Image (cartoon, rainbow, N blue to C red; front, side, top):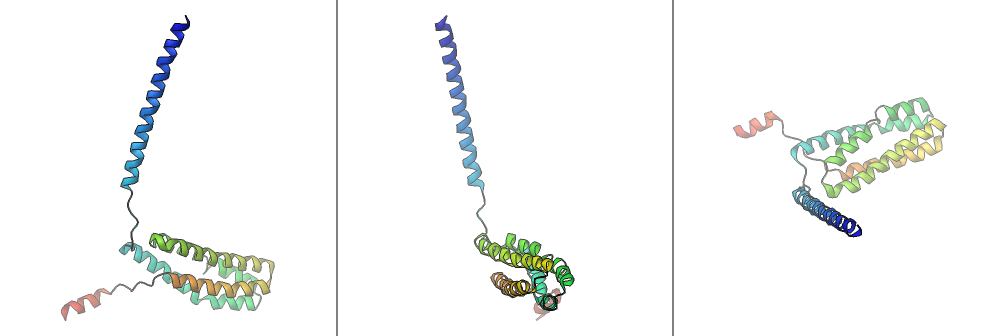
Length: 174
C-alpha cells in the first residue's frame, strides 16, 4: 500500500515540477520579447510634442507676465483677490507644467519635474498664507515663486514659432 502511494505522489511531483518549469520558461521567454520590443526614448521631441510644449509654455509665460497683479494683491493684503488669482489665472500652472514635462525628452524630464514641483509648492504656500492672512510669509513666498517660475521657464526650450502659411508662399515665390 505504501508503495502505491509513494509511486502516485512521485508521478504527481514530477508533473508539478515539469509544469512549473514549463511555465517559468514561457514567462521568461515572453518577458525578454517584451523588453526587446520596447522603443528607445526619443532624443528630440516630435512635431506634435513641440506644438504642445510651445502652447503650454506660452500659457505659463502669460501667467508669469501677470504675476505683478498677484504681488499687488499680496502687498495690499487683499486675501480674497489673492486666493482668486491663484485659483484663476494661476490655476492651470500645474496642468501646463505637466504637459510640458510629459513632452520633453526623457533625460530633461527629471529636472523639469523637480522645478515644476518647486513652483507649485510656492503657489500652494502663498495660497495657505492668504487663508491665514499672513502677509509677511506670502511676500517671501511670492519672491521665491517669481524666481522659481523664471528658472523653470529657462529650462524649457523656446522652440521657434512655425512659419505662417503666407511666409512659406512668399519664400517659395522668390
